[in-house]
Length: 337
Image (cartoon, one colour):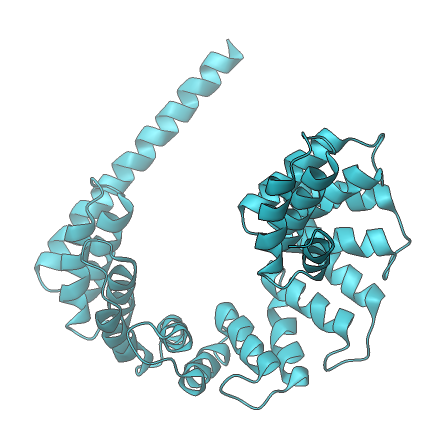
């Protein structure tokens, strides 16, 4: 009975939400048809998200354009996004750049970030890291988290700006302290490498753990490595396997290869298991991971968990070797290949 009541309450609530959305749609439509730019933008969002009306990206573009042509920055940014992603219009990076630039020049941080992204990646314009940095900086100064992270990356690598690890750390730290996992992961790497700060493996492990706990697979894999090699934490193979497995199940190739090796070496697992190792090596290898390819070549060369097959071993060693994997290159030389 309780479940039935809860189900009815949930249905009533859902119907109420739909009713409110429909009312909001009608209200926005009336104002939009009278030329209100904010309402036109809102109507575009409703069509884009299917709120209060059947989702229709072409109609969304229509209303975003009407507002954008009035200089409404949010609509200009939304229209730029539709062109960038090819939603409701053919994909057109040049057109996306045009609309982002109009909004960015009015000081809209989201558009400034998006414009910086196009310059960084050479989409709709010649790649220009300096121009990307310019727009990221303007957005970052307004607190745009994505811009802070990307600008940090430019400073870390010296792309478009003088290389400055201290500035990168400053930029990563702001969003990292707000719980943004990508920033936490990059900040951890800076501490691990000692870039712009005194090397501190314990501090690196702390930031990896924070990001890993929030479900970020690259950080989970890195935390596994910290435990496997006892860097910044007490060495613990079981804990390493735990984090590799969590990341591997999310499809992270690096963790899949590492987990495969732990099963091959009987580290942190109940028993040595070649079949399980092969499974994880293959998953990583098929995603193009060099360690996974090397591992898959190795098990085929030795016949561990699979039928021994020199041709298959050479195939996977070659794939890894082409990515510069030294172990694979050595293995091929020993096989006379």
